[in-house]
Image (tube, rainbow, N blue to C red):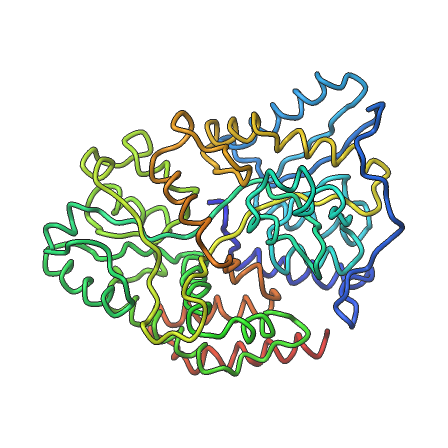
Length: 448
């Protein structure tokens, strides 16, 4: 899975934060450290070696990036692309060492949120506003929300490479057998529908939380619903976070209700993929998954013919009285950043322009199934109808609710992750969880 920041990864991110801080990362003011202004215009003569590191080592994804690198070299014979690809967890370990030693490559992968912001605050990311800002010709080719996900203090530091969001997919046949005419529009309706689906013989929502991050995705969305946006922004900032708003407890209580009323037992012992299989074979009526996983709900992806031909999706619904942003959607793009210390920054920008041109964006979606933030890249030839429908829905969202395990400090994320696991197995209460989160936030705030 692409979005998996597991417990060990979060611990690695914590260590990375310490090491980045040792080389001057998060300043006390929380402002970006900027170096001398760089000319990022495409060089007239393209030559030299360009170093790149990604986290797309999986054989399903790696060939696309290899092909792009080779195509760029072919179009620019004077350029050699040194591409290194590692997996999710090895990447976090690798980037920690590279950051601490100030030996980052010219281009490096980053998740949106505080993961990216650490590099910005540490003076390790180039300000790309002049070339990919929303008013630039290149910037206008991207979804505005995708660009904004890598914005920091009004400036753009990242180039989005893909788009992702979280949706509840559902089996329309199961809903019909349970007497449901369509998806629920409120959280109360969802919980009520779960009872009807159980009575019809289905597991209402397939839930595998073996590594903790699936629960974090629920809390990402529920926090956004139950806490006012301004409060959420303050608490997600490491230097100001307190997490005292009652909405956090309410979100945890709602998650507790979803687990109790809708999910399968022993979710913490079940992988996300194993839970997904129960949806694909028609035994579960719903599954909360990412847009990137939509291609799995095909016969080629492992679904039965009945499921593959009879599924749709909806957003996780909010409580009717939720005080937060009901139109925000959990998700975020992944992206690439340019090392502020790179001597090849202009060439790096030129390569990223090439990687994200319309032709390569369409190829990426067709070859590996990743929706692209490049507008017009999803077509009938490279995506399933539900993907295109989801991209339209994403465009109507008021904002991205960036994954809780990347938007917050790693210590805070660890507290949420451990607490969500405790709620899933019944060993912790929402009040106990938020107390641990508050304790972690106080520690981080003091360090900031």
